[in-house]
Length: 118
Image: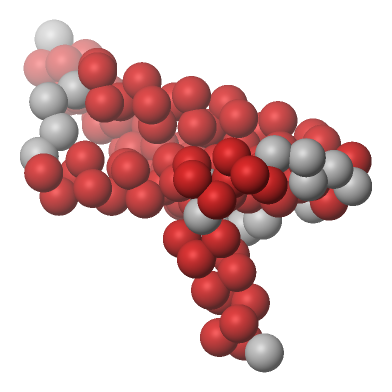
């Protein structure tokens, strides 16, 4: 009986460790996606899904002020990336008047990165 319980505990521990490893990898991929400008409609759609997940976290969890700020930055990066992909793919910049109020270019993190790298 003791050997059986020890085996159950070992199996549980391995499963928990695998789950943690997969969760960490997934979180790293999600975070990387927030720093990567979408270059296709598929990439933009992935980022739409990630943006929805980030937005859900504001209501699903009691975030600390620091966590909420970080999630807000992640959401902003995703939305600027999605907008950039849509504009690049369609060639449309028809909402320029609105974008100067709602999504100002000086707050676009990808433009800041591009300027720093130039």
